[in-house]
Length: 372
Image (cartoon, rainbow, N blue to C red; front, side):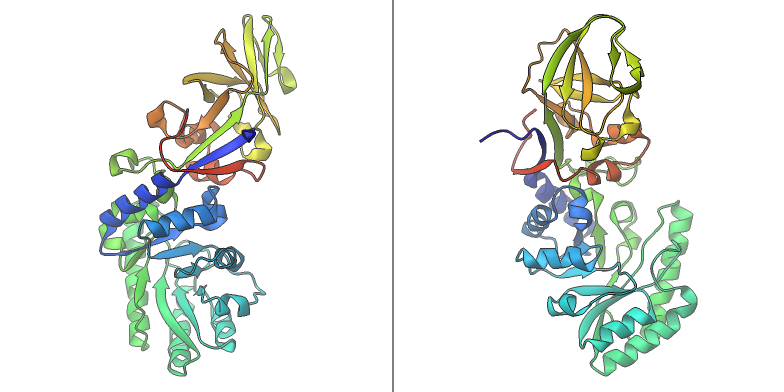
């Protein structure tokens, strides 16, 4: 079988190990593994199955279509979808027993119209995004209690999301969340799940864990914040992105490299062409900013502008050949660049680096150490 030219190797053993380490850390809270956006670029079904094998209690998807795709793949675990457009068809989601995040009276009534569905009411505690506005919360929980008593829906959870701004802001949001839960209780609701923490708070703030934590970037082995040492927690990156060298060329001093000649070879050298570009998620903004790839265990700089389909690597006099694997990012313990380094080079965050990997890249599931 021909080796993929562009390949993201997804280490399912790493995903399972990450889930186990995090479950132990946050116990007795339940764990919801977030597999939205194609599992942060790793492959939603692949990650979902690995997470469940390792003991995840729930799965989370941003929208109903993502959740339905998991159901179509035969995944029957508890599943929550929380972000909905103004015109949503809930019938398929409710038939598939997908729990729905509800952020407004309108959404609540839409669920009630379809019969007995399970909902998690979301209160906005400070992000100013989706979630019920605080001034509308009493009306939402009062109506939800009436509909639940009438057997038209079940309120299974109440949730919100922290801003991760600083400890003081997070403490204020926790207080708002607790007050919102108290209001719901006073209205007659008894939800089994209260959830507020995503990866960062789940790891750093025990008082934010409540009954369930929603783990996203951490299950992929990456830290939600630079202050967190993922490796020290036993987390290992699950994605290794690589391309096969497609051409090798010797160039003289002064040779222009890629569009705009933003880089010229300062001395005679060898350039290796790697057929990955910004169409595949390699950030163009990392051009000429020190970005590196690892070829045969040696790190070499990317030079010139990163193009849509390709970039060039200055390998000097190293014996690089066509067909060699050029690893962009993976587990830094193996000597390759990390997604965190790429985030620095591109002036972004590790979430974006892995999530933006495009559909031309073959996802290959592996179980074990990556082959550098």
